[in-house]
Length: 299
Image (cartoon, rainbow, N blue to C red):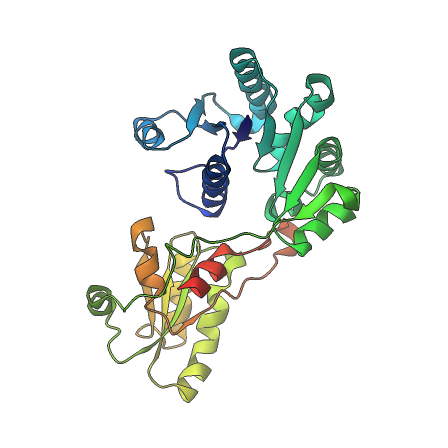
């Protein structure tokens, strides 16, 4: 029996949601029962849950930032009492893995906690860093998505032998080369263009601004180049202003939100994929892996 505890799960979209779903799907395919404890019981979520081949329990509760540990403890206890078994527990990050890890010896649980990067680096208070160290030290193993993320944990005092690197993967049956979508080519006016593409949330970490600043020099070498920017986020107004200030408003194309079923077609519009991500040091905002690099590479 396996139990996955996560705050981030489809149908909501995002990198960690994808990571959690693919972990659950592949654990199911390996055989043996798996249950997912995920947040928010909504009609949309229930419809999604019924379509999955594994069991999903939705966790309720308000103000998770304040009462997360209580909610996790409650739903973990409910699961253990209902199922009468001691599962291997997978937690998508340390915040939902802390309580199971602390209780692991008492309850006879094997707990494995994911480590991605940003959720660790952004914790600047020593008290929070001690909690992170305690979670991973009490867990059976930490799963870091990269050597970089593993080194972050080691610097916090987590023993090296406690952290294994398991790089992110991508489903190459889904993300694969296709002919360019003629309807998308028309929508964005890409006929005869060389397309530079970024798919990412518009936040400072993702570095779309750095590509826009470089674009005038790129166009000197490749006159037909355009920059296709997919996604949403708080930086979008600033990026639009930056493009206009450089005279690039006709060369930078903002697609807005791209639904999951259109991702592959958008990747296949690109001649080059780029995400010039940066570390925002004082905020601990970092790209621990960047799964869009794999998705683009597979396409």
